[in-house]
Length: 94
Image (cartoon, rainbow, N blue to C red; front, side):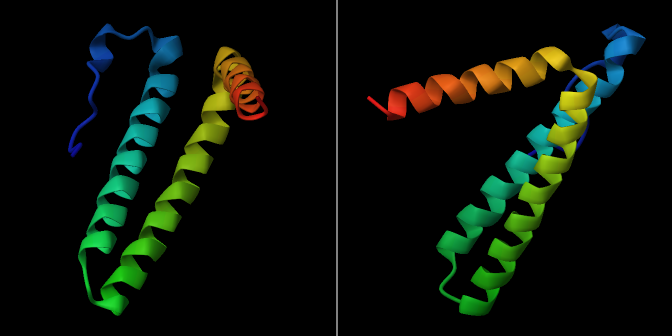
């Protein structure tokens, strides 16, 4: 689990710091989604499971928020996301 930013910001050019922060935030949210969904799958208590899955869903919203910002700050990121989606569609349609 992440408890601090996993990159050394001192070595990052100032123009790239916000992109690195957003990427780190996305990683942290993905880590949280994985943790909550794994715990939800382990519990037999339906109330605990429901809350964990609800929180995991909220974390996915956070990922979307950070991703939207990253797309605005990094045009190449947007292009590669679109290219990846197209490649996946091609594979799935075979």
